[in-house]
Amino acid sequence: MTMAKKEGDYDDTETCDAADSSRVDAEVARTSLRLFFERNPKRDAIKTARDAKGGIWKVIDVAIFGFVLFAPALPIIPKMSIPAIVIVLWVLIGLIMLFKIEYTHRAQVWYTCLNRGIIVDFPKTDTAAGWLCQVPVLVAVKFLFIFGFVTYIGLDPSFKFPEVSYLATAVLSIFGLTFVLTLTKGFVDLEGANHLLTLNLVIHYFEDRELFQAKRLVMHSCTLLPDCLKGYS
Figure 1: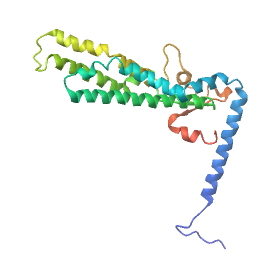
Figure 2: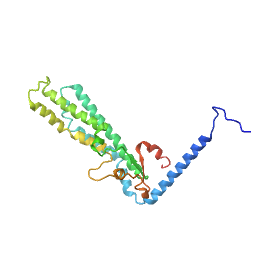
Figure 3: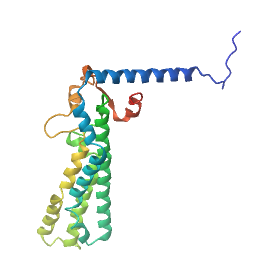
Figure 4: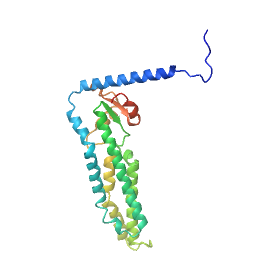
C-alpha cells in the first residue's frame, strides 16, 4: 500500500534529477570543448592574442590610457578658481579610469572564452545611440560641460556677458578636451571597429547565432556566462 506524501515531506527526486541534469550538462560541455579543439587545431595565434589581453599587458594598457587621459588636463584643472569643482572633475576622471579597467576585464574574458569555443555577446554599442547612452560616456560628457562652465566662470564670475570672446574661450576649452570623450568611446564601443565588422557584429548583422557552428563556436550572452562555463574548465 502506497503511503500518501505528507505536506513538508522531503522528496529527493527533484534533487537527483537536478544532479543528473548537471552531470549531463557538464558532459555535453566537455564534448563540445573536445569537438572545438578538434575542429580548430591551429590556435597559437588566438592564444597569443588572449595572453596579450591579460597579466602585465592589461596593466600597461590601463596605465597608458590613464596617462593619455590625465596628462593634458593635469596642468589646467588645479589652476581653476573653485576648489569644489576641481574635486568633482578629478572624481569624474577617476570614474572613467575605473570604467576603463572594467571594460579591459571584459575584453580579457572575451578572448579567454573564444579560446574555449565561446563567443561572449556584449550589449551592442556600435551605433551612436548605443555608445552615447553608456554610463562612462555620459560621465565624460558631464566632465566636458563642467570644465567649460568653470572656465567661463573664471573669465566672467558675475555672468554679465561683457564679451563674446569669453564664451568662445569656454567652448574652445571644451573642444580642447574632447579627447576625453573619444578615448571613453574607444573602450565603451567594445564590439565596434573602425571600418570592418568584428566577429560579434558579423553574427549580429546576419542574425544567425549559429553562423560559425561548423567551427563549434557558440555565442552566449555575457549575462549567462557563468552558467555557460560550467564544464568548460
